Length: 199
Image (cartoon, rainbow, N blue to C red; front, side, top):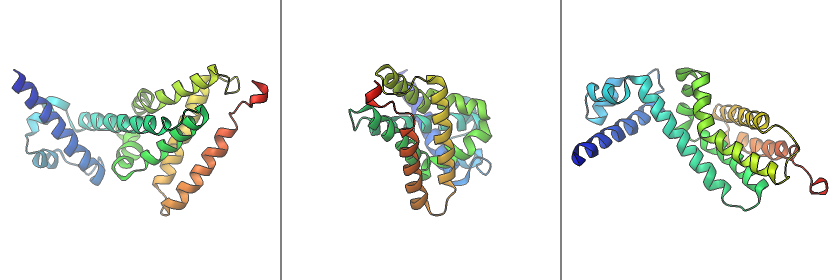
């Protein structure tokens, strides 16, 4: 029984890994299930059994990418004990992670179009947006923010970060666009800061 479970887990892992490589290199539309199962040395039946179809596999791959990005944000934010620096580091890390070659095609380009905006947002809320909301809620409770709606500011910032990430992914001079983006993030976050003299 344990051997069967281990075999199943390995089959799923292999399909996700190979599927991610194909979705990254070719995009969703130009990726065929046949090429995935051939590279994974598995059968179409195995893929259909575990994921249903190509879209089902893509959804699992996208969620694994979203989880990976969330972990990257947490690591970045943990570099400081200061709440403003944690927010700043986390926002910067999101853009850096999202435009990384192994993530941008899946997360920014194909994700919303393949799954639809609502499902894509649901996955975003489960991972990166959840961390952003928790950080902002904690900052508000400690008096670091103006008295604003946490839901509103979370969606506002998340939308801005997703859009600026997509813009960066489309730029030919990635170094310059990333520098410009980091400057904008710094200025942007300053506007939400509640000064210590008012706390």
